[in-house]
Length: 102
Image (cartoon, rainbow, N blue to C red; front, side, top):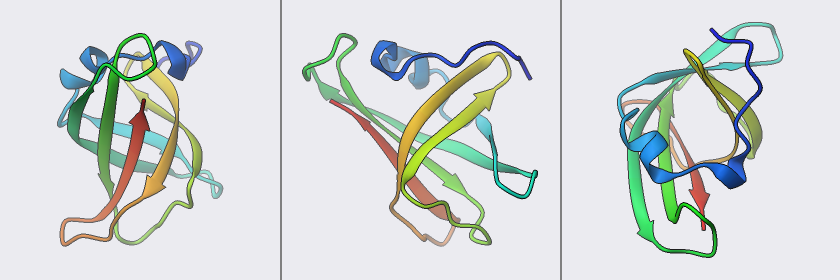
């Protein structure tokens, strides 16, 4: 993984995530382990109030560990970003989380 600075959420665009659907992101948790989150959906939501348009991201992780609503650093190879995520699961396939950009 890269040690690069995380991308600032205000500069994120839908296009940056659309190509990463299916990718697994790593998120460091308190006990020192990494939690794997798979990006299962990137959905455009129109223009919004931000440059780059409005969009939502849905991630799925293990049912064995649930994150609380909050900001988390996610890494995918050379891509690192801090996202505000909200739990929206659990589902059969795992615990769901969503980030929305408007």
